[in-house]
Length: 355
Image 1: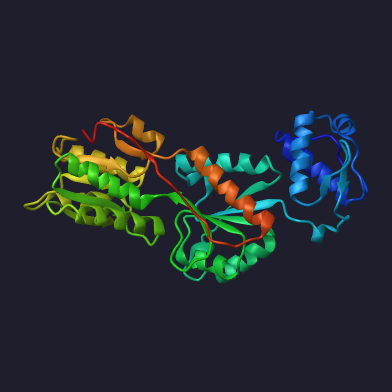
Image 2: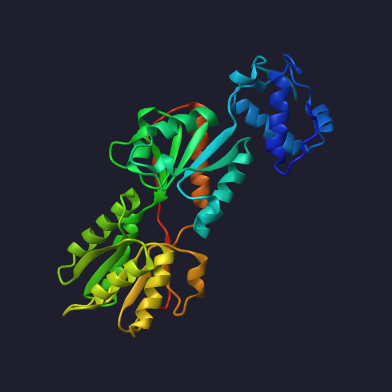
């Protein structure tokens, strides 16, 4: 066994070494004092105490007399050891995620590493099919994860984890009847707020440009947008679905611009679709915001480089990751499977497309 941490997350690695020492029987009944452990492991007292606190939360040791801690767990076989792995499940490879998602995934990995857990990213198309049961059974058996994080999850995927009461957090909104915890942007309130902003710009014909999907967050977006516009009797509003392709988005925009009541206020979901929408509108000679006001429901660094600069809603990815990690750690440490929905209200970044 190596008795000097070798990797960058010192607290996590120190906790792993102490955990291995306890379970393999190197230390019995009482751990050495802090000074001796610091010398032996070549870490600072702050790092050591962080690692010892992690072991206390896991029930491996408890505070004793002076600076010594009593070992409360017996040595275990590898099959009995508690997993220190959290698996994030996605339909897309990590490199294909939006920049904002990659940012909070990295932050989540750091949060988990600080308390002794590793984050493993798994991309699986089979897990996102209409019948994911077989693929998920194999995946759960092979990974032996302490907890799960679901990204872009389908209703079938959520129901499978919910029915088995596995420790799981949804990064997104959960579907009705699913007993899982979730962290998401408050899309209903965001789209309601955006409709009010467009109305304040004297826009009369509003549309929400939305990819056709069954994701719960998109459903909440549509509900919030329509509920807000229904309260304003002088407005007309519609949900304009598209297939996610460039040609599909352009064709949908052309339909919105035709007729006696062309759209003059547009809320667009997904930053990549915003880029297509803005460039197509400018190609059609539509001036932003003189002829049409536009807001992006989501944020991405690339929107800063569009001209005109796009008005958008921004969510702090570090805070988002912190909320996810708190829920994950609560589940893997206590094993409780109680639904807990956490919603974040993004901040409006005023851009030129709003006026």
